[in-house]
Length: 394
Picture (tube, rainbow, N blue to C red):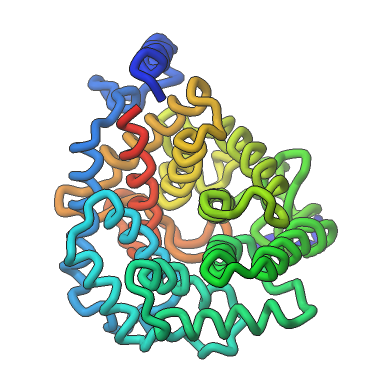
């Protein structure tokens, strides 16, 4: 890595589809795809079929939700990668409430005694990510043990003056929805207030001037990538999945945060600005490159960032926050790109970048290559599918 010092109604929907079908082949269709699947609006049955297939592949591969994950070393299965999968599983459960999905999630929580990696004293957002599903399961069956440990962890942060915990932008997706959920469960605005304080510190203070670019409306992954660091083409380095984590975090927070809570207006403004910046750099085939502003730096199809952008953008349309005429073509293309080009016949998800923090990490990214972790890409895909499923009604 270069050193930093080197410095919806039926009629409007039909009109949108007409616009998509009327645009040029080079701009809208996957090159060489005669069926032009990128511009075909998906239906609910097809969406659910892809989600079910991909999830079944994973559940069959991991029948024991408590089995440790072994890559370069052994890790417990309540780490962030698996926690993101369970976010997606809960999204699938909402639209297809099969008991086996609920039981699988509960068994995961039970085997870990509803605990966090490194214990309840942890301030690490990655370790807190599992709390999103713990709280969601508590809301379905309010057993105190389900949220006791995640509450203790977040309370440690809320009751301290420190605001610099989220020094990498992935942390926002891992932790912000936890703060929001706890604030609602306990009717305590201190969770909203602290969340906003940490968000603002990450946005404006980490690194030289914060990790957010007010000019480009995108985020540097951490201080190693803010200016003067540049991509090979001389532009700023905006990692796709990192920005996907932020867009997803804002969607998951805004979905339930009271409109008069601290930070609501700022989150909403940043979400809209990000959605526009992300849509502007979508690939013609519907995917996004790993590097948003340098398509030649490890360019090519990438599923995890694409799925997160699809999720956030589709959620914005569903909530009436994003203009349907402008953004519906974006999510139709991106969902079909992943659903048709990345999902294997057995449900395996291709083109998922492995763990890391920049475009060069987790390579190669191909249709058949298995990343070091398969769970977070699937979680993002299921989150996206849940929102696209809702859009199909419109």
